[in-house]
Image (cartoon, rainbow over all chains, first blue to last red; front, side):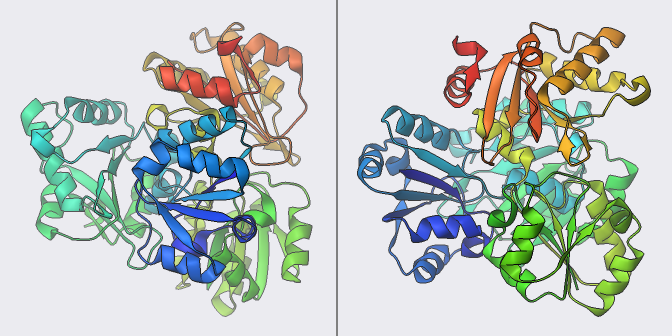
Length: 257
Length: 257
């Protein structure tokens, strides 16, 4: 049996009671470390709490899961995934691969940044457009599509969640992400973001030091906050309630200066 | 102190370890019963597990929270909310009201139907348009806006999650919801849904008897499944991976007949 378990956003303490029971009865526990960032120390916390070895599973282990599936065909195996486990294609593919190998798969959901972020900012789920991913701008890779999707959402009055690329155990910082967005905009001139547009940065959500900032992008650049993980939100049109809630929930909020 | 705790989708067993600790140390525990449906027996399970009284909090208690806030100003109070606690305006307002009354508020997120549904169907989060709510058609209340929003999403290639109204402890059934959508369409002729369009119904998600159905709306009507809770998804354009995953994850899938 293969269990794909969501770890939520708080490390070991956001495991559900059912997940803890499953983990306690499992023979092999892996912690997937490449599709998202969990609080540091999570792997140690898990080992201590469960009194068991928790192994790291990297990109190769999950995308070419021959060893993982072979183990699951003979033993009860848990794969822990930060957030909700079925938000990434990789884990859907793993679920299908396991099914096709005749292995029973149980998936347990958990909190995902995708549903938590709007609430943290006081934004209405009904006004969230499709999210976008922002890649590191290696070799000047600044895809036009990111700006187009943001622009489309804004023109429709929708908010855009911008999921930030990961590297070396952290997401892009807020100022790095804003910088990349502005460079994209400079290159493609789509009208998605400008230096004076207001952007929200949700930093260390549900962790010690959580911070919601809502300010002009030039000010987020100037802050140069070296904190991770971060998710950006580009607001579309805010209704009265959203402006009110955002003003209450954000540490620094442009709308209520 | 007021704790607003997400209960997730599985009743007591989807509480997180941290939430269980908080509940154990709390003096008053309320379970909010009107913004969503938890598995029946949840309140009894919670009482038994915590060995404490768990009181029901209805609409009045949460929307006019004078008593709740007064209690929270003197005691540690927990309000349990099915799914994620900050997806409804009501709870955002409660958070603000408590803050303004000088009461410390701690919110603990949990799995939400909003982020879980795409994964259960194998749909890409990047292709989810804004969700819509479908009200019971009392007095022939069939708002044009529901059809317009679905049509807008479909025209943009996005999928639409349709959140179904609650009454007497259950959501609309899948066939009732499809019927309402078709009546709306008949009234407004927007081109959002037709009898031959394919619709997905996610039934009893993460509960015993979970079922993902993907079929022409006329066939969902014919099935007359009296099961709750249900969330519908109106697919926009499916990419190759989505069609493949949906075919694997759905019990009955039109795309793979």
